Length: 367
Ligand code: NAD
Ligand code: IPM
Ligand code: MN
Image 1 (spheres, helix red, strand yellow):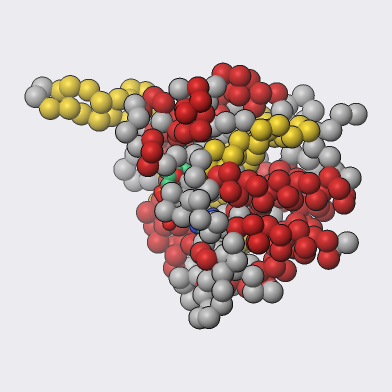
Image 2 (tube, protein in one colour; image 1 turned 90 degrees about the vertical axis):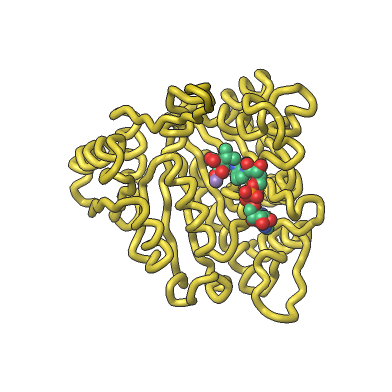
């Protein structure tokens, strides 16, 4: 049998820097655990624009459709801020999500014990936190029509449309209930049914799907209250299900509960392929971090944890994913910190590459 295939798209800014560290981890699993992947690499975002004039070439899109999983770094940066909207780096990522139909975006937020002191919140509020945000990723206001900037009388109007069909809500809801069944059987759905019709439909459909999962305790919350509750008492949640835009914002918020945006991985999953595994793209929640790009300061953990999610969700290697997560936990417990994680006075930060090496060493020690 051939090796599973992995397409790596490092992207822009710190994307290539953190991906270099992921490559070390992939190589380690190949050499020490016999887990070999057919790895190919291509361009996305500004890097693709610089070469092809578009943020994602058709050939790259076609490759992404064929492989077992895609791993993406980050896209965007100030260099591309003035580009026409249609070729902005972010459009490359949105095209991947849409054309691969990756409707269910899993964004776990887990507070490692060693970082509990470092959260901007009090230690007891976040210690032991382990929640999962399921963000709808291919519809809603990100994609709804009509959209654009139009002339209206003597001024312009900018329009985006929040739009959800019942089937779009149903499929992502099902994926969230399935996850809840494998976790603590508790799901909170967030929308704004008090002011948005799409929210009313969302709540109705989620409630209906919930009837197929009677063991799951389902609750509903307005998303604004949800944002407040996430900061007030995040451990009341287990799985949170929400739409594309609310999910974008709530997951950045959840990131700070864990200590840094540099810690948060994600899996964007679609329907099962012929081999039974979901179509999948794995990417950190953070962006290209132009403020620290090129300085060796980026925390590679979010991207490495995204590869751990690939091991779990695409390659049926849950035990190896556990091994990788445990190695990261050990490194953090040993006090190894990139600059974003520095809490204690006098502790010297390690570089991106030193953090990758420390994780490889912890993997060696796990054998
Ligand atoms: P960002 O996530 O890039 O950065 C926000 C802050 O977090 C910055 O101070 C940055 O230094 C810090 N940070 C982020 N990741 C880090 C890491 N791994 N280690 C240490 N610190 C880290 O968000 P932004 O500044 O709003 O956006 C910058 C660019 O990235 C924009 O072009 C935006 O569109 C893009 N973006 C891309 C993605 C993606 O590719 N998935 C996600 C978000 C933003
Ligand atoms: C994310 C990012 C993206 C989003 C951008 C870069 C398109 O913020 O993955 O969270 O808004 O979905
Ligand atoms: Mn975001």
